[in-house]
Structures are given as structure tokens and as C-alpha cells.
Image (cartoon, rainbow, N blue to C red; front, side):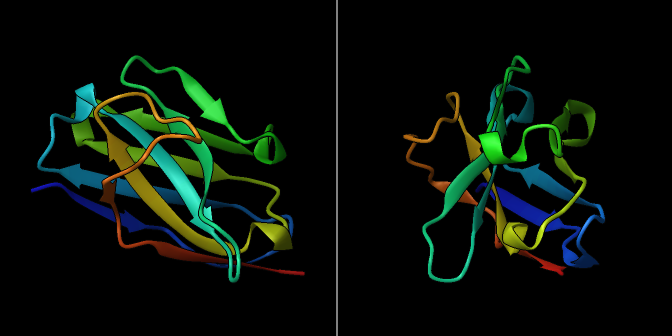
Amino acid sequence: QVQLVESGGGLVQAGGSLRLSCVASGITFSRYAMGWFRQAPGKERELVEAISSSGTIYYKESVKGRFTISRDNAKNTVYLQMNSLKPEDTAVYYCAANSRPITIATIISNWGQGTQVTVSS
């Protein structure tokens, strides 16, 4: 059974930083692509960044230069370092795992429970 557990969300002022973590179990982590999605109130869930099993990274243009995804296969953990946060980054952030590369068209079946990120102006 796949389990993804996120942590690291919280309340931060604009311009601040947060680091999200997601620990995976029930999968051969090194063989899976991992991604971070977010969903703001009244909006659809969107892909923020993804990293393939080989380390190839996809990122949403609006977070370029501010957010960085990374993975530690020894710890079965994927991270999202978020710098220069803006109020529009406020959302619930979800971790996802997929046996193939994650794109905006990927149908994800393995989700974490989500962690709230709130950026105040």
C-alpha cells in the first residue's frame, strides 16, 4: 500500500521560505517519479514541480527560480524548497508518486493528504 506523508507547511509572510517534505512508503522510491501539486480555494489542482526517477525536473513557469524540487532516495523523501513566497502561492500542497514521468496530463493515483501553505501579504 502506497503511503505519502507531507510535512512542512505553515503560515509565512510574503518573501519568506518554507521547505516541504514528503516521505514515501510502499513503493520502490528510486523507480518512481515524484511531484508536488497545489490546489487553491476554488481552483483546480495544478502541477508545481516534478522530478523523474533519473532526476529530470519539470516546473511550472510561475515558480521558476523560486521553488526547487529534490529527492533523497536513501530517505524515500522528496522535498520542495520554496523561496520568495507570494500570496498567490497560498494553497494546499500535495505530494504525488507515479511509476512513469509526471506531466500536467498525468493521471495520478497516489496522493498524500496535503499540507497547507499560507502566505500573508
